[in-house]
Image 1 (tube, rainbow, N blue to C red):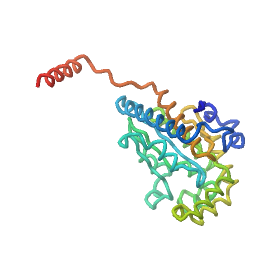
Image 2 (cartoon, rainbow, N blue to C red):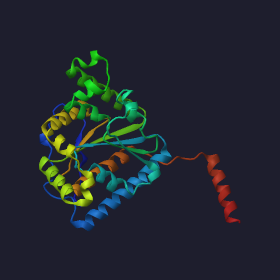
Image 3 (cartoon, rainbow, N blue to C red):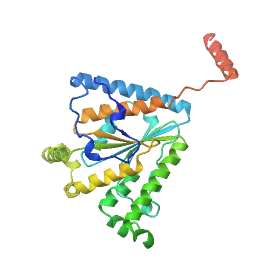
Image 4 (cartoon, rainbow, N blue to C red):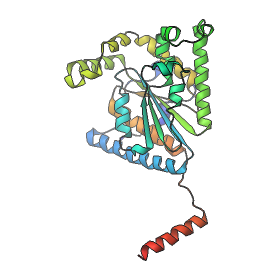
Length: 294
């Protein structure tokens, strides 16, 4: 399998970021056939699982994985294929859809804050608080008509977005300073590939449930969404909470890249299993002797 360089995908400073500079497809596949792909993915799962177990024992960090993308980019499948081999007790997945009435009675970070992973666990957000500067930016009437914010806050929408970017940066810095490390993935799907996947969902009865006419409506705002994603990445890519722009037209390449990026981040934590004090090691030795003498 070809080597994956995290720096090809990582954005830690968005000042010069242009989405158009990042491909939807790699020039060559990372794997050599189906068996090579499946073995590589399984190897990644085992290594991620081992490090998550160590993270639980180390009890200093948690890891938050944020997945954002256009419809049909493969968020669900990537989460399932990459994390399916990890101990289910060590992973928490949350999918955020349209806010409920209770959620709308709180600030927009509230519902995701409740779902943050505790130390020792990996938390996965399928969509996230970034919807507040993506969908809401493309459809600002969501903010002005439904979020019931003070009128003074919505009079200058340009300032509102700046304030939200700042709040998100501050929020993510706070998490990082308290042991929750963050990885934010934008699965970079092309408009042509989205069309092909939508047609497949329509033509295959077992996939009809994945499609709605609302998907076509949102596709009509494609350019607006690309601009919103570009601005969000520019404004919120930091060393503490980097973005990763991953080519998404080939699902297998995408899953391998995401796996390698997660593995690298876990290895960078420099975790260890607890070093037991002398008294506790003596207790273990005594227990071992007792068991052997049974």
